[in-house]
Length: 207
Image 1 (spheres, rainbow, N blue to C red):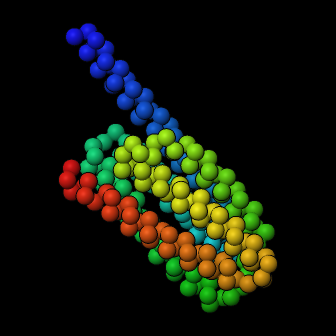
Image 2: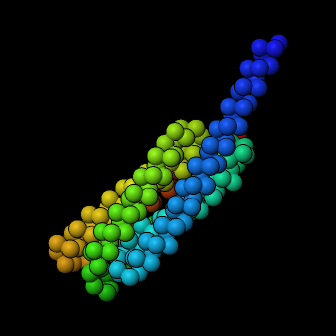
Image 3: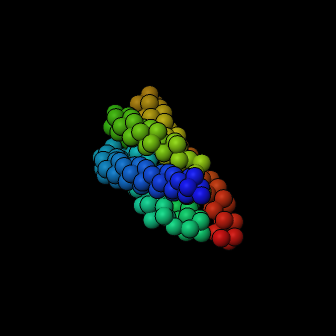
């Protein structure tokens, strides 16, 4: 009985410790993404870059994603699946918004400032690699943390895309690399949204 009791307590303490670790990591990555949104979006406006503004908007989306993850952390599987569904819906809205921005950029035809794109794209990449490293050990814990990890992984891909666009804009003096990367990011958001919703919906229905 004593051994069983100690084992039960140890398991509960381990669970609580893991919850505390999750919360601390989520608060940290939320702060990183909120700060980077302000910096990168301002740089995107200054540079006239669709890809940079899209990447910054994704940072804002991630900050909200992490807030939802914190909300669902100590709740049931149904709440966690509901938070994942909300994240998927928000990613979907981001994708539609970026497509609208791409259409607007097509009408202007002015190339963005590639130096600013490169500098802030690199800064965003470093920030997202830090977030990805922090979230790595929680990626398979539940559907909520899995979708949160997916968001950070997509961010790293987007950051690399911004850097590629910046180099191509500098080389060609054309807005098209920026526009094409912005469009690709929109498609990535839409695909990610579909996957997150597809994974979370059966769990939400069954819980």
